[in-house]
Length: 428
Ligand SMILES: *Cc1c(COP(=O)(O)O)cnc(C)c1O
Image (cartoon, rainbow, N blue to C red; front, side, top):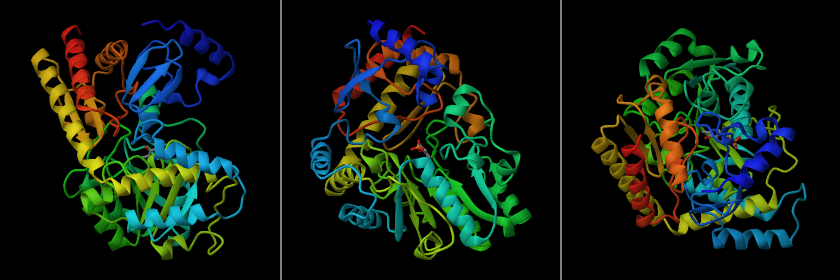
C-alpha cells in the first residue's frame, strides 16, 4: 500500500491542528504510523487519498450502522437541504423524531435533541442533579461519557489509549462530585449507596461498555443499579450513545430488559451527522427549561439536515428489524473465526461481543471490567492492527475501542477478515 498523500496531509495537519486531528482517537498514537486520510466511503468500504480501499470496522466510531451513503439517508438529506439548513425555530421533523424515539425506546417519554453525545450526557446529568437536588454521581471505571468535566474520571476510551488517567484542566471540585466504581461490581455500588445514598443524584453507566473495548454487563449488574437507584431516589441514566439502536432497535435497555429513568443517545441517531439526545421520564425531563429551572439550550439543536439523516436512519431500522438478526449472525461468525485463528496460532485472545460491537483483547483473562481490559498486551494489539490495516481491514486504532459491524457487510467480508486475522496471527 502507498501512503504518500496521507503522510503529506498529516504533516500539514500537524502544523495547524493540535496533533493533526480534531479528535484524539484518530491519531494512531498508540499503534504507530500515520493515519490514512479518508477521501470517500460507500457501504462498508472506505477509500483513502492514496486510493487504498479498506473494509470499515470503525463506522465513524459508531454512527454508521447502515453503512456509508445509504440511499434512504442521502435522499432525506437532499430533501432537507433543499428547504434550508438552519432556522433556530421548531420544525415538523423534530416532532417526528421525538415521536419515533419515544416509540422505539418506551422509557423515553419526552426527549430533547442536542448536537453530540457529550452534550447529551452533560445535560442529562444536570437535569438529574436539578431534579433530585443532589450533587454526587456514580460512574464506572473505563466507561466514557464524552468529555464532560466531571465525568473525565477513569474515563476509558481515548484517555486510556493515551495513558491519561484523569484529564488535566478539570477542577478538583468537579471531579469530586463523581464516584468512580469498578464496572460489574454490585458490591461496590452497594457500599457507595450505603455510605452516601442520600447525596447521590444519579448513576450513569454504559449498559454495554464500548469505551474500554466491548465489555458486556454481567447478569444482575444492571438490575442491581435499577434497584439501588429506586431505593435511594437516584436517577438511573443509561448512556446509550453507542448502544442505542445498535445492540437492539430499543437499545441495551430492550436487550437486557432493564428500564432506566433517563437515556442519552448519539451516534446512530444522527445517521452520520452531529446529533445527540437525552430523554426519559416526563416528570424528570420537566426539570429542564422552559418548563423547569435547569438551563439547557443549543443554537443548532434539532438542525434540519441532521434530524433528516437521523430520522431516515431510525425509520429504516424500524421497517427492517431483520437487520439486527443479520448483524448478530455476522458478528458471531467473526467472533468464532478470529477466536479459532488465535487458538490455532497459540495467541492469547479474549473476544468480547454484543451484537455488532466486538473487541479482540490481547489477553488470556476474562474481560469484565477495566482491570481485565488493561491486562491486554497493547504492543501485540498494535502489531495486529498494523497487519490488518495493511491487508485493507480498518479496525479502531486502539485496544480500548470497540469495532463495529454494519448492515452493508456480507459473509464474504467477514470471511476475508478472518483470513487476514489468521495471516496476522501467523506472522506475529
Ligand atoms: C461516543 C460516546 C459519547 C460521546 O459522544 P460524542 O458525540 O463523541 O460527544 C458519550 N457516551 C458514550 C457511551 C459514547 O460512546
